[in-house]
Length: 203
Image (cartoon, rainbow, N blue to C red; front, top):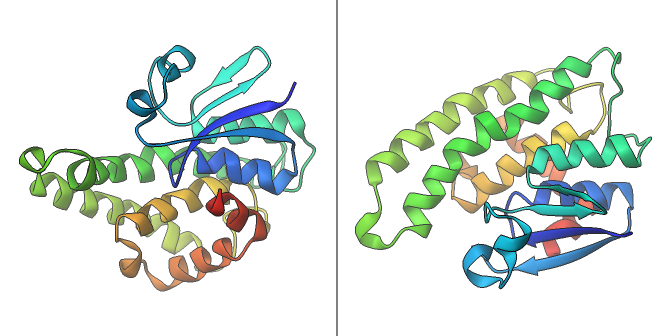
């Protein structure tokens, strides 16, 4: 059975989509307008949370973007974009994979909500300012990690880079990218030059 991925342009679903493209796995892509709970009939029956992404693989349904990427490399590997337990950088790999959403994307979602999604009368400039500052304070860890390496772990591109790279994509969408520090700017440009990234971004 073909993997089915429900996707919105430049939403978190880009993480598993980019992973699928890097791995060359066959999949069916359902592209929806955001927010799909209001624009895609029946989406709440598929994902009661109404969030993006949703991946369906046979009897398995998943909704967490970094978790889906980990699922794909673990179940459909072996692949060069994964690290196996016991690899020297395995802990770093898992830490960046999960930090990408819990630490980096989380404050961005509040900026997104209160600059673009809420009606004008409900927008909160103080929330935007506070959580923009929060995002950049957390992004310092990335700038420091890239001081002496091109990729986050094992001297190679992995799904940790995909997961963190999406936070930079979202930052770009929110007008934050001009404030990225030099190491982060270089890293982001390198990620965006990957053919699989470009295919995922076009979809």
